[in-house]
Image 1 (spheres, rainbow, N blue to C red):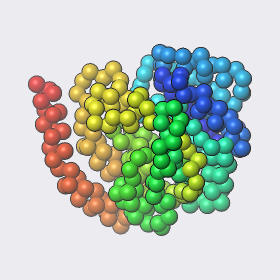
Image 2 (cartoon, one colour):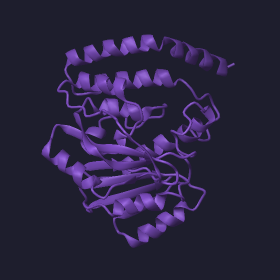
Image 3 (cartoon, rainbow, N blue to C red):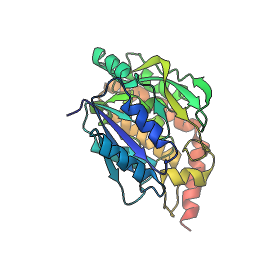
Image 4 (cartoon, rainbow, N blue to C red):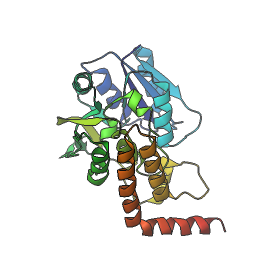
Length: 290
């Protein structure tokens, strides 16, 4: 049984997936399983993955018969993995060879740390660099409430969820849920279970291209294709679902009652700030039923 599992949710990524897989197979720490969950791709992704699986026994390829959306595939591939430490690997990005070794060393030496991840270099579709991105999410505060609120008030681009995570901690969360920005909400919930460690070197290379989920966040049709493909019913209520999920995270977490009360009060204030969005979503949901 491997200590590290890498779960790769994939969909129509024939242009980039070979580089992503190669970067994982080239890791200096090589004792891991790589589980690829193909979300019913319609391009050449399946053939590429099957070829790699026949050449390396660490790779297990699963082809889904229907597209369950990006978040659904993240949850599905997590369920197929078994390692003590888990990493999600996106099929269009790639990692430095020392990524796993460096992150594992931190987690082994710091039992209170639940997530270790490196700095991110943003790259264009062709691989040319854009910039090194500053996440500022080295969450070492002792109080869970401070880590939780710092993440929600600091995070910009979401990269840290692609680091190395203690599976036992992640399994207590909702993982990546159906609402928009659910990767951010997952990190906030995970921060209630332990500290985050940021390696101050760019070991993760995140690619920006027109098919990526983060390419156009204001385009509803583009986001629907990623979060809820094939859904014809009303697709909304994301702000309501965000606050419901965060409230559930707070009261489900193994933290003191005082911490839960403190965070609930802060969450209520955040909801008050977002009251216009909450109101618009209620009106939209009501109108969709007419």
